[in-house]
Length: 212
Image (cartoon, rainbow, N blue to C red):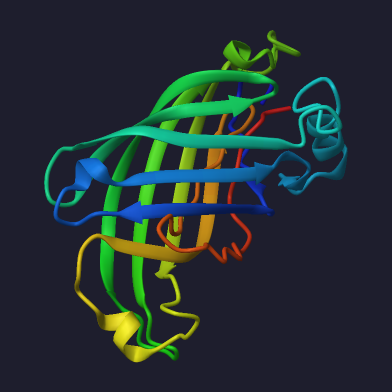
C-alpha cells in the first residue's frame, strides 16, 4: 500500500473440489472457484474500488478459477501443484507450494475423514490485465491459502465407515478454504471431491491483498 506496507484481504464466497490419491499423489487434482465480488479487506472504499473496473471488474468477470494440471510431490507432506488460473478474463499458469497439515477422522459427528492443507504462491497482477495504480500498488501478489476438506458422502449417507475408510484413492468433499494474498490483487483455491458430487460449502476465506 503506497509502497510502504502490505494490505491483506480475503474472499468470502468460494468453493472447490479435490481428488486425493494417496497411492499415487501425481494423480491427485484440484479445482476451485472464487466469486470476485466477495473480496474483503475491511475498508469499504477500497473493497468497492477492487470490485470496479480498475481491478477485478466483477460485473464482467464474476469468477476466478484455478484448475490443476499436474501435482509434483516433493516429500510425504509437500508438493508443488501446477495449474491454470483464470482471472479477469485471462488464463495463466501458476504454481502453488502445498503442505499437507493432517489427514484423519474428524473428532465430531458425522466423523468423516478430513484433510487440511496450507499453500502459498505468487502472481503478477499485470499479467492478468489488472494494472491500475502501478506507482502506488505493487505488481506482485502473494497468495496464502488455508484449506480444510471433508470426505464426500458415500451412497447419500454420512457414515462413520465413510469417515474412517482407508481405501485409495480418497475423495474429499465439503471444502472450507481460506485464500490470503499480500500486495495487490487476487486469487483463490479450494478443495473437495471429484469422483463424487461435491457438496462444497466453504466458509469465509482469506484472499487477496491489494494495497491501496
